[in-house]
Amino acid sequence: MLDLNFVRGNLGKVEEKLRARGADPEALLGNFHSLDQRRREAITQAEQLKARRNELSQQVGALKKAGKNDEAAAVMDETRALKDKLDELDTAATALDEELRQSLARVPNLTRDEVPAGTSEADNVVIKTWGTKRNFDFEPKPHWEIGEGLGILDLERAAKLSGARFAVYMGAGARLERALISFMLDMHTQQHGYTEVLPPFMVNSKSLYGTGQLPKFADDLFRCSDADAESAAAGAYKDNDHWLIPTAEVPVTNLYRDEILEEARLPICLTAYTPCFRAEAGAAGKDTRGIIRQHQFQKVELVKFTKPEDSDAEHEKLTRNAEEILEALEFPYRRMLLCTGDTGFSSAKTFDLEVWLPGQQVYREISSCSNFESFQARRANIRFKPGGLKAKNEFVHTLNGSGLAVGRTWLAILENYQQADGSVRIPEALKPYMGGLEAISK
Image (cartoon, rainbow, N blue to C red):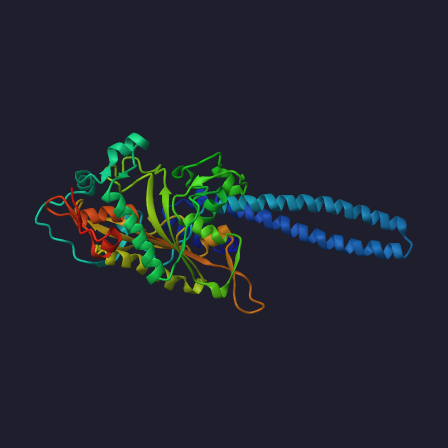
């Protein structure tokens, strides 16, 4: 969530940034200026009445001391009338404050100045490329053909079990998925210094509000109960509401919701494997072949909590940690800086890592690494206590990225390591996790 005082003092800049995202400032902010003005007027009037009440209270004491009880009673009547008016003003200010909060809950983060202007992924900028694309002496196949041919991917039976956009991995295919999860977690914990977390796979509305999924993206989520997306914006959460997590970012970021962290603990670097569940409401007709876009998939996530002045450097480190997985597996990839129109709701700046898929002759996203600055921390109320006795608590900066999306890494192995006879070689880095298996063959 944006800082109310910042929006109030920089409304023109906020509107400009929202237009750069392709958003309509008037639709998002509505009558923000009018609401804010009425709220401040109510607060000012309340402060004036409180000052007057204090004056009258002093008069009552003086009149009683002087034995002028009748005059004191009249002043007390005026004090009681002021109290009723104060209650009305406090109620009005609270209601207006809640309206402003709900309005800001639907406003995306402001992108950094270095984020390129654009409306879609076509306007994203290539920052770097790595690796050499393999030259095949045969026509490379897409992963769904390779997986079905080897009997390690069964989309037909998955559809029988659950419907479209689900997959069943069989035999060496299931083992490869498990191997990738262990490999990624080991690399991030043993080489990159992250602490492993195994969080719940269901969360409440407040957690999804904290990271920015609610209330805007309720249709992209799976509900387990009568959770109400609109109540999330208003802060009215039910004790029994549950949603399946769309990413480990949600539970891991909310670990420190409503907490004040010691400065010495920062940065906190966490990694987590979880399944992820997405309704993909806006993806009808997209990526219907294979396992690019699924309702359920596995992911290893990286999450950081940093001081504001360190978040840029930590963003680069996090992105490099994800890239090192790709490099260990020897995948050609590229790093993209997302444009304003393609940057996610909560992010101020995002790098996408895209892996080369020879069977489809395209680069596809395999990790998205974002700096949210204080946007999520303000929604989730995650602060830190700087050094110094008089230092004021500050909001942390949060970052996260996929390290990596396991299913997309799985299919990248099939497409990049496929052989002419239909088999798939195991990357050297994964052989210890596959019991020394050299290749998957029929």
